[in-house]
Length: 258
Image 1 (cartoon, rainbow, N blue to C red):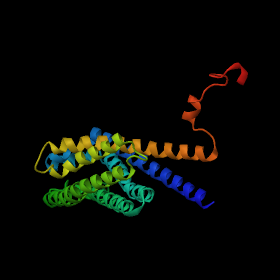
Image 2: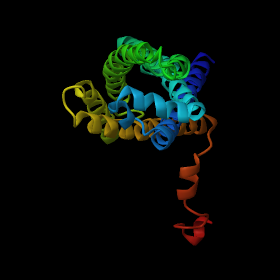
Image 3: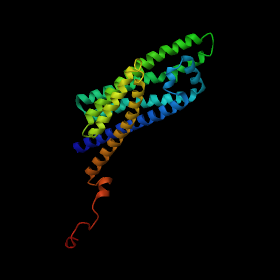
Image 4: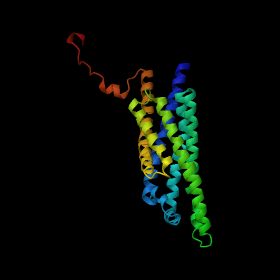
């Protein structure tokens, strides 16, 4: 009974981790795609502050919505890290939980400014008497919450989290090649730290996030598949994949055996 209960808890933990990872990846893909279309994000961040705020005002409702979606997706790394940490167990599991929570926190801190702080700044910038102060406030928040906390620290923590998960699950949930793909995505994401001094790092960081989202979806699918196969074996029923490859009745038997 104890063994069965423990296995069921692990399956439940794996399912919750898979759901969190899948939703996080889906929101990241949808958010970056939509913001790229309506806000020219992230290239817009290289333009003068006046242009950024003008374009923000023109599409404020949609921009706030999709930055909120990105923030929610980032926040899901916290519970996903806790659940993955439980699956990994031990010291490595605690590190996965801790870095997942930290990565979620700093990214939410960085992204929330577009939802809660920038609207007032964009409005104040329309007033000639307040424009200079509003733009200075935007640039301060952009550098502190965006570049330092959300991006530089966020890139480092996300990369660390991904490497820890890839190492912990390699050879069990993750095939070796997919574990290596996760580590490669982490390395590309980490290059974003160099973006202020190395222009190409913006492209490598973006490529890393594209690969990372695909990797999260693959990991989520493998977690679900693993729990499904485990449950089928426990119940004595073959998983769907095994059922499709099972020999048909009568095939390979001698007439006397029928």
